Every structure is written in structure tokens, then in C-alpha cells.
Image (cartoon, rainbow, N blue to C red):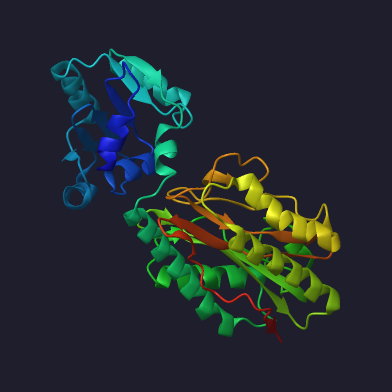
Length: 350
């Protein structure tokens, strides 16, 4: 079943068509990444409206879609008349009010909110999507392997972030999947700290990064030590690692995100760090860097085949440092698969 057919199958009763200009929604449905375009799906076909820049590529790569550079609104009006379309669905969690009002003025149809319909469908990946995420993660792993011998105590946090991004781009990434995090010393106690143009502080250096490859994201975190780790630092690191490995080992079909979160959280809290792990254990990854399933205390949905999610416990000691270790897990027909291959032993950069 093509993704066009998937969205058609999910049309609510009474909805004749679906319209979107959201790049990620267009990517998911058409399997082709383009910008500044529009996708119009009816019950029996789909049309990409793009411009000359993307025409040849779209004709070759888009799946299950016609492609045209004709004026989009004029052409859609023709389709509406030809197919007697009365109602058009849209993603009300993504479409801004101004664009919706413009569409209402252009087309004499009733517009029906469909919630986050494409996000709901895209939550469960097919094997092609799984392969694209694995490829994105391979780029990320390879970039980290290239980075390690380049790390020096006299680098700046911004130097580390820039090097990570360069290494990913060099290996085929189209861009980062989020703002690269490379934070050291006291800055590492901020889970989403911002790299500073300052020399790396002694202590932990936490690096959280990922890339996009053909529209699909990767996400990983590794923490190393600038200088030598003392006994307390080793305890913190080993506690996070123990929690992560325990959670990875506990993943099973049908368990909820909340149940998995508790596995890691119990270990961290049991080691005396209650209140120092303030975020969820993980999140889904796909065309969006954060999507379902939720792997946190709020994650009530069962983890099942087609899900891809992170496992990223952390300990953050305000004013001192923080540690996080993150892998991505794919739920396959043969069970869970950890697709992140970078080492997790405690590395000291001296």
C-alpha cells in the first residue's frame, strides 16, 4: 500500500479530499522532499503542485502522485469541479489560521479538521522508513567516530558542535535534525544547553546531535570527560549507563512508554539521584525529531512493531554537571533493535 493509499484509507466519512502545504506531510505522503509546494489528495488520486526547480526530481521520485507546475489554485478548482468535491480535510494542528482562511476564499468547499492524521499514520514505520532512519543513524555514528580523535581540551563548545555538523554533512546528511548540543562543565547540567564560544570546561562534555537523511531523522547523545573523572563523576556516569542498558534490555512488545520510563527512573532514583532526571526517557523519531510514541510517565500507548524511539536517561546536578546517554530503538517483527552503535565506555580527553 502506498502512503497516498494510506491517507485515502483514513479519510473520515464525508471527506472528499485532503490538502496540505506542510513540507513534512508532503514528504510523508509523496515520499519526495520538496519546498514551497502543495499536495492535493482526492479519493482516487493525488497531485503535487511544485515549480520548475523540483519538476524532474518529483516526476522520478514521488510515489503515487501526479506532478504539475500549473498554477495550484486554478488547477485545484478544476479538480474540485471534475470530481464534485464538497469537503476538504486538513491538519488543524499544523495549518495556520491565515492559510486556512485563504483556502476557504479560494475554494467553494467545506473544510474539515482532521487533527494530526498524518502524524498518526506516520507513527508506525514500514521497512523502507526503518532503513532510512538506520541510514541517518549510521551517518551520526560515523560522525561521532570521526570526531573522537579530534577532540582536544582547548576546543570551544561551538568548535565541537561545528565539527559534529561538518562530519555529518560530509557523510551525506542534508542537515541537522535539531540544534546540535555540545555543552561542558556546568553547562552540561542543562539538558538542552546551548554551545558557547568558550573553551571546554573540565568535567563532562555532553553531545546531543542528529541529522536528516532523505527526510528522516536520527538522534543520539554521548558524554565524555574533559580531563580525568573523579569517583563521583564515575558513579554518575555508571548510574546513567546502567539505567540506559536496563531500559534497552527491558523493551518488549506491548509494554507502554510509561512502564519503560519507570525501569530507568527506578535505577537513577535508587542510586540517590531523585529529582535529577527531570525529562522523559525518550520519544519517537521519524520525519519529525519528536513524535509518538511517548516514552515517559505520560506514555500510555503500547510499544509495537513500526515504532522508533529513543532511550536517553540522564542525571543533571545543577551548578556541577550533567550526563546523558541516548540510543535509538526500532521495534521490528523480530523484536527491539538498538540501531545506535557508538561506544558508551567512559572516555577521558586529556
